[in-house]
Length: 133
Image: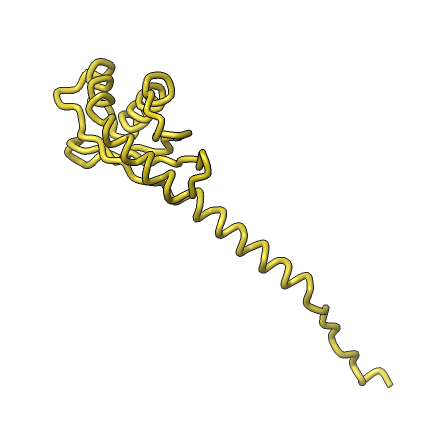
């Protein structure tokens, strides 16, 4: 039996390859599969993705369109997984937007703002000791 982490990596690699090469849905956009997490019974796979906005769509609209397109292709993707993996039961695929990149960019922006504030603050000079006089 394959370790869960290794199986997740294999599923991610296989799905990424199929999504890039074989899916022809115009609503899909430019999608990157970032992670796969299996439930303990391996019955479901949570597939996390990011999507770059295209054709004047906002980030949220593109993510919604990509999620729908991936949901429509779930059966096709499971069929490819079944052919490539030696498993009794191929996990059901559930797609979720990956917020880690957005959250990381937000945190980086906050840290940059803090650094700017710290640089703009005047340097405090410690008072000279009056004992020398």
